[in-house]
Length: 433
Image (cartoon, rainbow, N blue to C red; front, top):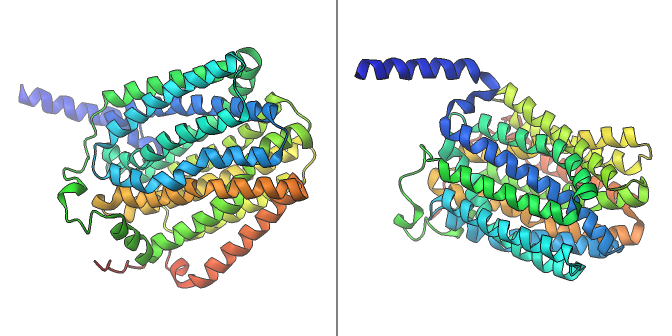
């Protein structure tokens, strides 16, 4: 009987190797095969909601400043709660934290749908709603980010990150287009209801998996010093690799990623398109991001990660700047494709580098620092780009931000020249306790 089981195990492994070669190697792991479709369905629902929400905002207000303020409210919780969420990720079972947040946000999706249906939705209620939903997401995001190594292990981590990014951005192609049609045929409220349903589905798939690579010890069992946020922050700052990645991410977040705040304005007032046209713009970004993620998945282990980070950031800036000055839709879509490729390549590379070098006991808190920069700083970018657009117009505001990003990236490269020459292989300095 034992021999038969051994043969079955070998045959299963051979079958997995045939069906999930190379770029799809993480699918050899059963838990990842369950996790992946749930995450993809949730991402699809989120993109549908993004389109509906963007259109809801521009119908509730014509003020670029208020549009920026709405984005500020959506992302402010990530600034305030990402670090506490990291401590939670290092103390509790990450899977249960994510499941709880999905259940809570599913309820709030239904509530917003009801507000829209009854005609009681307004810009101020939307801001409050975004603060609540964002708070739930901010607390759980470090758990969601640091849960992946527990599902696939370190060996498959880069591949799983690339595949996750690919599925997220594939839905970024499908979802916005679907969202445009959803707004037209089932209405804005229907899009919120749809996202609530997808969150429930994702919660069920997480309930079905049992991560095989979870760390046996939680940070609560370690010393008070090593379990603190200050210890993790010192680790981030004293490791030149992590510090440089985080600073570059701050440039990306403050000066490049806020462009999406103004996409509804470009769709309506600059390119003169409706909700379906806004969906096309988001779809172009998603397609570029999907191509970038699949390139990373097929490429496998990359030795010149530092160079890829810079190339990706420059591509993001040039793509956004080109989009700002384009008036013909095909050229605008190409520019957004380049921007999407650059943004996702940068984020996936930075994420994989951090997850590779960080110790298991610090993973949640270090990834919360990453989320603090990638998402927590977004409110400030959204707020000032809305103010800048009110002062100089949406076109000039995007051009100015892209130029500032290029200058900042150049200064960082000059300061950390040796690190980039070594392809981020310099040994980290020990953390002083």
